[in-house]
Length: 358
Image (tube, rainbow, N blue to C red; front, top):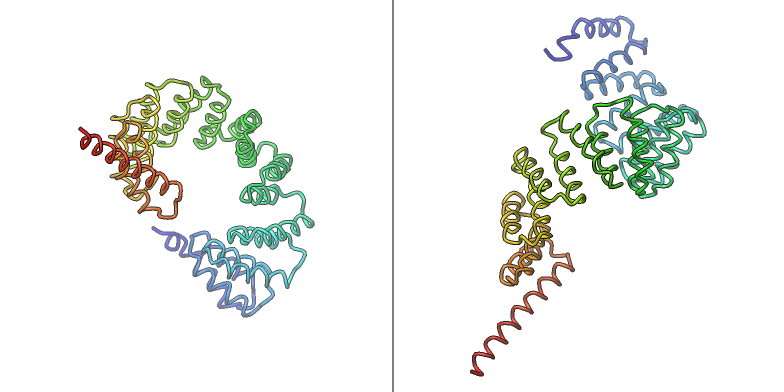
């Protein structure tokens, strides 16, 4: 039974109230809210539009309408609606906050920051607002500013797992892993079985070369979700960094069993085998990855590089040529291709010349 059927009596009752008292705006707001709760956004929009015909300055209807357009990814309409709301009330910080979020999704960062800063002048006690500003700075690769705003959010809600996780991730970007670990663990105090946070914490410990602790967190993630593909990938990378090559290969194999149609484990294991000078085995894995992702130029480049290492210039030329065809704007790969072709031609010419001289 879907949401509408399950709540049919309530919907009928509110619609009846609207019919009997069409000037009561609260019933429209309530009906629209119910539709949103059931993810019936188009029906909610119709309700709010009827309300706005009666009361064009109804601030709540405008905010709700703008929010629906935002969730529908119709950002231009959302901006238009929130701007209409501001014409009604220039002192409602939530309008500036929502407008900032919309501009951020549109990657119009300057307008987003202007909206957020205006919201801050009206409310400096909302951690979500500081979080939004931090994410905006992060999107612009301004990590010190992101950290500063995430810290303000944490100062308002010290045990909020989302705020601590955001701060920890920003510290990771700045390679401040001790600080990152502290806040990942704070986040886990409130949400101990969150697999993503546990995995991030494991990666941070690995970056600190504290591999035993990292493995404890990796194993915890896998215990919670045995099919978490990225957990196996990250654990294998950590084991490589630790120098445990055999164990890393075994973990990559487990990842392959979980997602045999994902090329990532094949490529990473192949890269590892190349570093161990097991070139033939590596090429076999690259070939498997090519079948999964035939349009990935990086895989062909890896294979071409490996062929060069075993002096198979014909194989290298073949793979580089495919990579160039897939990404004709990659000047570095074009250079690799032509250099390898030139080397192959020169060798062949020298060989023929030697034969003739005999």
